[in-house]
Each structure stands twice: as C-alpha cells, then as structure tokens.
Length: 346
Ligand code: ADP
Ligand code: MG
Image (cartoon, rainbow, N blue to C red; front, top):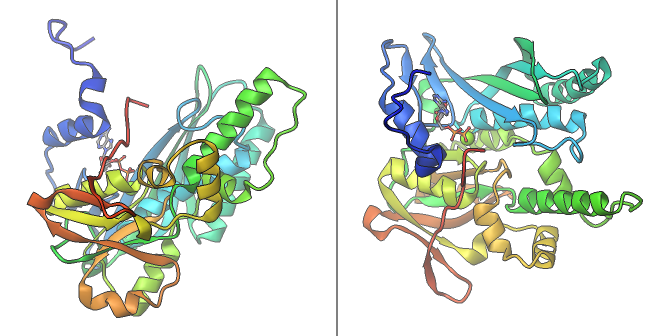
C-alpha cells in the first residue's frame, strides 16, 4: 500500500507499548484544550470549568473473547466495565459511553439483544448513559469498541506520572483471579471439544469465573478515597497485570519500587486453583491481568486513613529510579519484578 517495501519491521519486534510510543512520538497536539493526549488510562480535555476524560477499547472475537464460554450478556457487561475502569483509573467518575459494533451474519437480533442486556445492566449499575455509537458488518465474528466519558475537576485527576519516593503502593481487591478463571474456562473448553458429552465442572470455581467474566470497575474506591480526602499521587487500573502497571507508573514517574510478596492480596480460591494448574499464585497476580483493580500510590501521611478501607492493601513503597522494580519474596529474597504483559499483537 503506502509503506516503503525496502524496509519492513515486524510489530512483534517492538510490541504493543513500543508501537504506542511510536504513534505518540509522531502525534502533534494542536489544541490547548488537549490537556493529556496518548499515554495514560484516559485522554484529558479542557471543557472550561471541568475536565473531560475519554478512553476507548476495542474487543475482537477470537482475540479478546471466546463466545464458546462467554455468554453474550456477560460480554456486554464486561466490555462496558473495562472502559469505565479506565475512567476510575484517573480518579474520575464515568457518565456516558458510546458503543460501536461490527457483526457478521452469524449473529441474530436475539444475540444482539442479549449483548445489550449486559451493556444496559452495566450502565444501570454504574449510572452511565449509553449515548451513541456505530454499527457495521464484519466478514467474520464480532468486534466491539466502547468509548467511555467521565468528568473531574482539574485538581482531582490522577495521572500515572506523579509517584514520589517513599510513597506507599496500594492495590484494591485481590489479584490473579481473572487469569486463573480464564485458564479454567479454556480447560473446560478443550475437555468439551475432546468429549462433547462431558458436563462442565465449574463447582468451587464461582469466584474466579466471575472475576474473569464479570469484572467491576472500582469507581467505589474512587468515591471512598474522595470521602477520606486522599488524592493518590499516581494511579492505574490493572488490565495487563500488576507487574506491567507498576512498570508504567515507575517509568512515567521516574522512580523505582519495592513490593512484598506476602502483602499481595490473593483470594483463597485463586490460590488453590493456580496451584492445581501448577502455577505460582504470585506470578498469576503479577502477570495475569484483567483484574481491573486499581493500583495507586499515596503519601505516607495518608497511611492511617487508608488503613480504614477494608478492600485496599498496602503492598510496598516507591524507591528511587536507580533501585529499579523489586519484589521481596516470602523468603526475604529480592527479585526484579518481571512485567510479562503483552507478548504479541493480540
Ligand atoms: P489501557 O490499557 O489503560 O486501556 P493502553 O495500554 O491500551 O491503555 O493505551 C495506552 C495509551 O495509548 C492510551 O493513552 C491510549 O489512548 C493510547 N493508544 C493506544 N492505541 C493507540 C492508537 N492506535 N493510536 C493512538 N493512541 C493509542
Ligand atoms: Mg487502563
């Protein structure tokens, strides 16, 4: 097409984050109303007395979801939830979404209605209005793109770049469950393909399946922090895995970090099922992704107040840049944090 055929670099050579860096480097911002462009959980736009936050995500069948084990209603719910999560990650509250769909002729009216049942349910639960979108056909499968819009005052917005040495690192909820849930669903699928008469064995896995199929954006944490008068110095939502998100915060803030393995919150069921898969639960928490919890940093002086929140856990602290990213294991050994994250354009 338009590319110079003498030079071809594979996308896999630079990965998703390298690609985004490349796009960002070549993107010029022309309007003073663009406060923050590419590079955080949301773009931030100046709308006079308030700032507008915008985030978009694209979900592709066969890449991000598998309809053999994802009910359409859950898919609709999750597609909305993951976008609202990016608004929460900026310490803001979402209010509108747009939904764009590409559908192949495999999908019936009833299937689309089912998808929208989930979309409407998520909107209702999180008090968000569906205000538009686009619909088109696809040659194969289903593609969903959702844009979420939120609002915040200038001094309320939290970026990835504000973490300071000695700040405490906090995470909400628990981690690793969504990944272990995904592994369980994939295992059931392959067993079903091998033996279609088999009944799925999902008892005792309810929590991790819900973590994978029905994540919730943590807008409740944003509201609790506001109530306590705590403004995080940096924040992200955990979509790729704690290790990857800490890497982003540290890189953008020009700092390092130390976290303690024993402090990473992992639900018992996540732990047990990870072990059944012969996996280290801590690795699932660090690299699993899709938990849509929040990771944020706060000043040490906020410690007494943060302690009052049951669903927030202090897991470590920010260090200087030279110290790098360190995990102190349960045996007291220091290990560099590996951020596996994304490993191919998927
Ligand atoms: P998140 O995981 O929080 O959704 P991403 O890692 O997908 O964030 O994106 C990081 C940043 O890069 C965001 O600011 C996003 O808007 C931007 N971005 C991602 N893909 C593109 C693209 N194709 N063109 C322009 N900006 C992009
Ligand atoms: Mg995000």
